[in-house]
Length: 374
Figure 1 (tube, rainbow, N blue to C red):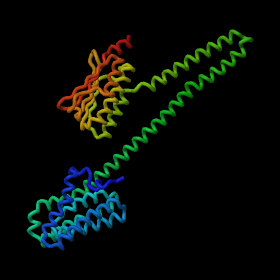
Figure 2: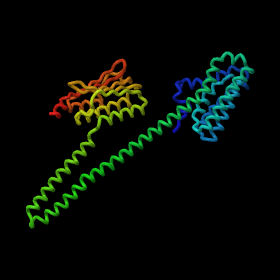
Figure 3: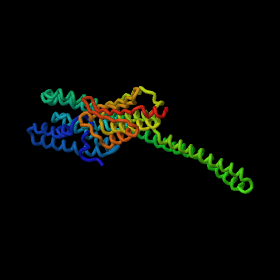
Figure 4: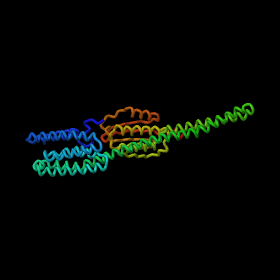
């Protein structure tokens, strides 16, 4: 639900207090007049502007264009009679919010012509007043030209980003469905055939048990061998599903930072295929946790990920330029979980904050690889 303060444009680089000043400022121009009639008209027109602005803000399509037209007329009156042109800034931001391209172009051109025409006419009616605020008038006219285009393009970009995020979410859902189908096929191919064979051989062994005990014993041995083979295949399939591949997690980390608009650099100076499966899974999970922390909490503009190895160890370093550089490193749930995972493979975790950012440094000895090779 929209609140009253939402009528002030967001993400403009100007504080809410500046917009409040723009709301109060017209009364300064109005009370410069000596005539009670002029003051009364000025106050009424100003209040009418905010009422129309609120009405336009909560309207759609035809009513919105009617409201904008009334705002244009009020801008002309306030500019010519009182030399106050700054309501045009409110209207400029609102014009940029129009989503239909044809409506945006029409209102943009009309607004620009109205403001330039009103300022030009104001010079003829009150030359000295307009000359005194000439720099501000120039800035206002430039703002009327540039703000709607910038606002329109920014909203279009946000809309495209939302569509991209929605598309990525749907792709992820489809990937899950596809994985379920793959698992179902694997189970059918792995267990279905083997269980059918076990059933048939068991029935055959039962029939041969009295007639041909030797052959029955052979069939039962086949049943045992088939059961062991099926169990082995199931364990391998479950193992493949549990283990997280480092290549896939690096690609996922890159995609996550791109969506979060974080500039990044990923450097891998090692042979990933030579990593033991357990070490690869632990490092992948730690990488996922670290990148998630960067995206959610760091407010960083840049992040680097570096994999390297020496004769003694494998090293993973993640460094960002976010708000962590201003805090004392603490082991929360995320970092504590990473430390516990690394402890299973005798790895270590170190975090540090410095002038340039926040750094997470993980090292894993190669003892595990050497044991597997032996």
